[in-house]
Amino acid sequence: MTSLMMNNRCGDMAQAFFGVLLLLIFFNGCASPEQRQVKRSREHAFIAYWPPPAGSQGLRLAVKDNIDMQGRVTSAGSEYIAKSSAPAARDAPCLALARERNVQIVGKTNLTEFAITVSGKNSFFGTPKSRLDGRNKVIPGGSSSGSAMSVATDMADVATGTDTGGSIRVPAACCGVYGLKTTFGLVSTKGVFPISPKHLDTVGPMARNISDLAQGMDLLQRGFASRYKEAVADKPLAHHITIGRLYLDGTDPEIDQAIDAELAAKHFKVIRLNKSFQAKWKQAEEDGKVVALADTWQNDQKYANQKGVSLVTKLVIMSGELDYKGDYKEALKRKAAWQRELRQVFKQVDFIAVPTLQGLPPKLPFWGSDVVFEWRVFDMQNTVGVNFAGNPALAVPIAMPAKGKTIPVTSLQLVGPRLSEAELLNAGRLIEKKL
Image 1 (cartoon, rainbow, N blue to C red):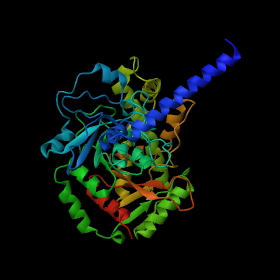
Image 2: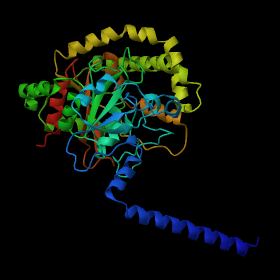
Image 3: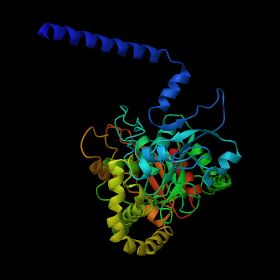
Image 4: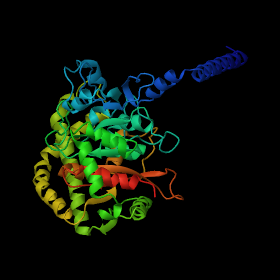
């Protein structure tokens, strides 16, 4: 073939390519609102999406796809399970109130495979696109990535997530929404894909605002709406609430600045927690990570050799064997002391305030080791020690300094005493409230 012929052929191919591209743009622009909405669902927030009927006014609920729903395969974000498992025979108990109240369930949301990594990446179902940076380039956070994105993009009012070491709060931070990690044992995890059901696993709601989050919690705990009203009436103003402020080494200074500015602007009473407690927090974070990884290995090692399970997931599962055979038992022995320490702190303050993440969400990598990237994100979170204790915690989006980073929002984590979900949401309401 001559050089001229090759040039002509390349030109024809380029012309054909741009012709197809123009057609795609044209037809996308002509799509109906319903078609565009479905297209949005395909941006990987949902594994299965069921648009509500036109004109529907009720609450829209999205359910993370590691929670059983009768007649649906619970994929747990995994190609292997999606292709090899039968549909669930019954709903998980955490859906009972939603079913009883005929809440519109709009879909099953995406997640990281087996809910065990924290960046939000999913190589089979696709990775949800966080819009926090305005360019869809930062991680959505995991594992409840799709749940966070479903409410962030207004495709659901409330989404259920699960949280073993931060899997509600981390994606809430990465997507600029609210996320509540509930007290261990408060909401049933039966019918939820297990990671650490005896120590860490919890179910909780995610939403764009506190009002919707309270409605979501009322679908998980009967009578929560009344408890929330009582909490609001008991402490209607921020100066009624004392916050213990915890500072951690390695935190982006502008995130600390944003949190301090927010608490001061809303007139909370703030007490700085000492370095002794800081050291105990760090130890609890390490112990929580050991337990999370060891329990992952105990519960999910049977998947480590299956075709259709990603390499990253396999490596994370198998790494837990070292933790199980190493520091696991010693970590669990320290749990009671950590719980006692928190009870002592909560005699002095109502809540502990700490960044959800030590830095802003990183960009999704185009190349490099996924395993290294996952560990990098894992080390950014300040969430696992809360799971280790079993306490509830609320991730609250707050503004970054006006002249600061390119991402305008970070996340404040409020940690409360056991069973203080209503009081946490009241504090979140006061932070959310405009001056």
